[in-house]
Length: 297
Image (spheres, rainbow, N blue to C red):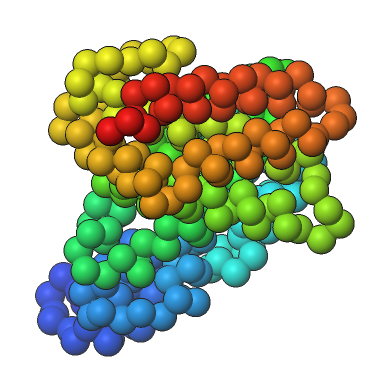
């Protein structure tokens, strides 16, 4: 009843922006509108912005049930610090779990992508980029992707939809690469030393992102030697990707960082060494293509 009354008030009354945020958008869990208000008012409050974004992501995934302990752990951490901390996550189909959506079905992925992309386009590049905290959004989306892949049959790897979602928002390849690079460094610096179960997925994602970037850059002049390329990017984005790639080579130490990724992969040991070898092979191909097509430019 209270929600309906508040909506009726908004339909027939004008309220100031402070009341709109504190008395309506916030209490009604209109997270997207809250972020738009913060952007419009140039109000940079990082804690509130992070809480709103975590709430948006949780709202598209929860409640749910899952048979995966790793998914349970990740989703439990995801909702911490959100406005949906009381949302239900059930382990298994028992205890009422069968009445909830199953995380492993992945039906939440297109919904989440569409919502993040639509809101991102409203916020990013409009003078208030702090309302679109790239590292936070990438970390949570990529974490969801990695956990989801772990619930699938062995060897299943989904497309790099978190990165593609950021590109749909018009985040540059260069900025996206810097975000992924910083996040994988944070993962690798976790207490207890390097954990192959966390480092390898991030290095794999880094290699996929680099492959997307190089393919986009090559498309600007109709050449593509990347494995599996299908020329997804138009010339406009390709030209932009080329300039960003050259900048990464000349001033961002891109080739040195690729060398660092490959060294890290060679130092990994355990049951996933075959996967590590495949990622290393992909990075070697990327390095070769960059040196052949761009280093001399």
